[in-house]
Length: 376
Image (cartoon, rainbow, N blue to C red; front, side, top):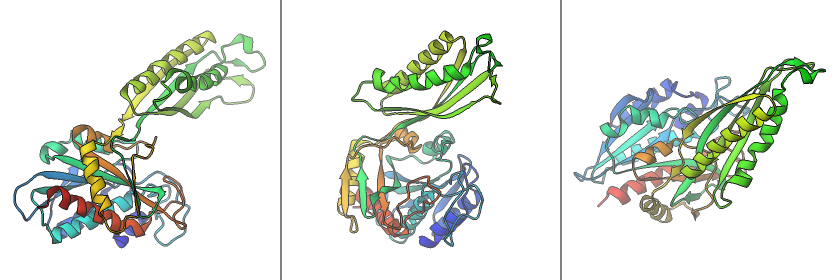
């Protein structure tokens, strides 16, 4: 698993370009004698293992394969060989873990039913899970439940976390285009200043969470980009604000969008400008089903090598497109701790590297879960 993981790390591929990765994964699975179906959602693939104990339920285990557009700053031997691309979120580790589990289960398929191993493209921003679903994933591979995991540097290696409900937030993006009337910077009364309107709007957007949402319901509004202007002495015609919002409840998601539109239109109109909001709903909230979460919890509590199981810690405001799969079927998404003195960098850091010491624990979790759910 370490060799697989480091090879994948050295050859990162971003959304819908995971051709080498998919070839490598498919070759390993085919050597195991598994039936492999390719091309779902572009570069995604599914491998099926039939249990030796006859008919039974089918479940799915999912790993994501894509890397990030990020320049790696590590210097170890398996660092990225491609400028501007890096496995900074541990999807190389997730893929190696699932390959390890498939290897062990293929050698000892003492369960009834089927296990579908889903290797998914484009988790980072591009909704590869949705693409696989729209390509007929669950029609071609019906399942009773679906499961996922993510490495979590914020937890020490050997510790895990299970949520019985929300685990990751809904992830949306927005573009606010503010149009004014450009003029000389020394004669602002001759125009309408979109920069001033943008400044006031940025501050006002923070009132959505602090003054409009129920304090007991979480939400985040972050302006992450400001674009406008060309020189020192000209007020521009246009300023664009971009950013992201996060939430867990559908009603909070609706409220954020509605209030954002009201603020943008009214504040900019009051300053002689015009605002257009493009609000894009990207990923829904990742919400585990309680029954499946309890099965995962029981598996982890009995698993050698697990030092501590955290039940229902605070959910993360990060987004995860496994949410699309959980909208289709019951299931559970857990966090696998990976923090250590040598692995102290967070996800999406240019210094991040997956902690290979956690590979066996992750694979054994999948194996144990299969035997718990499908074994006799």
